[in-house]
Length: 379
Image 1 (cartoon, one colour):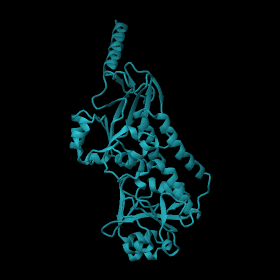
Image 2 (spheres, rainbow, N blue to C red):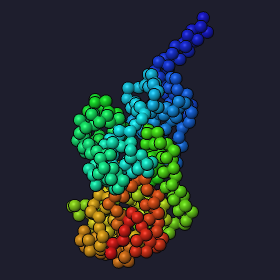
Image 3 (cartoon, helix red, strand yellow):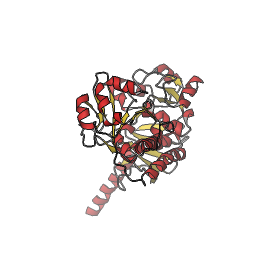
Image 4 (cartoon, rainbow, N blue to C red):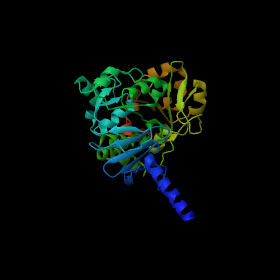
């Protein structure tokens, strides 16, 4: 009788699992679905904020840390039964994307996939990716409103099949809810939560998986990773680098000692000048007075001014106009003040190339900066 009861309980459990469609864990943390046979987990080198699981028949399941779970369904295939209600279902082809997440356009361009983007969250001319600006000028990508105020009519009547948002969307949750109410799937990308700069670049693999261009995505990532790997064979110079900008109130905005900016500097062969600075959260930039900043970074060998948020600078006179204190920095006296391009924040697909520019500055091989693509020297 006990054996019969045990068998009954085991069968009941199996039926329950099948009915739910998903088992919590079978092999490690691999999600299992009724009717889908697991094949492989896509390898990531530095990205830690997402995982991609592949199943027979071309299905993929993507998990994003503290974010969305996504089921990618191949064209002509059925949606697996029993999916949890919060799973974002994306049915391929995905070729009518609305893209308010500004850092993602570069990923699509790197995969030669601008044809999959139909709607922009920036107006023509605002993208650092010139190919995207051209596509908008030619009418191939249409402006459909800022992330906080999309043109729902354009998106709905244009058969938008996916909105890719940054975490800024959480400031206007009603927008996300409205898009979903209209039947437009929404995914929130979290590439900015990656500490390693190549982790941000590696998000191209996630977007490639969604639109069916996984091979092109892997090739785009490998190109940037190869640059970093080649730099890794060089010894660290020991030169210190300060990275900051001055806000409208005259305060310095810089970064804690851990995060992607310090990692970029280290990979480029330098030492972040504020490496001992701590922040309350991993994403937080740090505000301080110019006097406080001077006490911590006055002896930095190199200054790189961050224009991704502030105005782009070209001359030392413009730099000193921000604060007279800046003229007293060691790097200012030695002519080692540089400025990023305004578009560097959007160039996440070129992290290896940006770090290569930093390496030339740190190793003293940049000259007057004419050979650089993303950073220029102040005259």
